[in-house]
Length: 65
Image 1: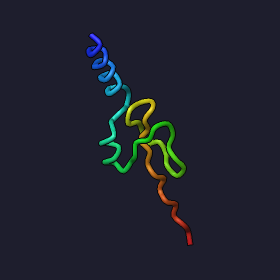
Image 2 (image 1 turned 45 degrees about the vertical axis):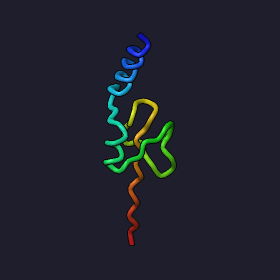
Image 3 (image 1 turned 90 degrees about the vertical axis):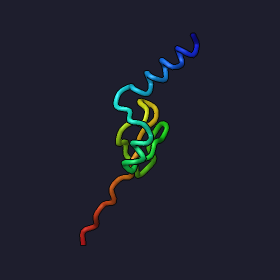
């Protein structure tokens, strides 16, 4: 019975919200992080909602000459 609950929790977490998983995040140039994105990164979406974020680097700003 305990294993059944564990499987149900895992399925619930993996299909919750707009979570695409780490493979999709890495494929699109992001990195999964727990908690917050670091300086110079922005939240692109979630790897596993709501705890593990998919963070991407900010685009380099273009300098006008």
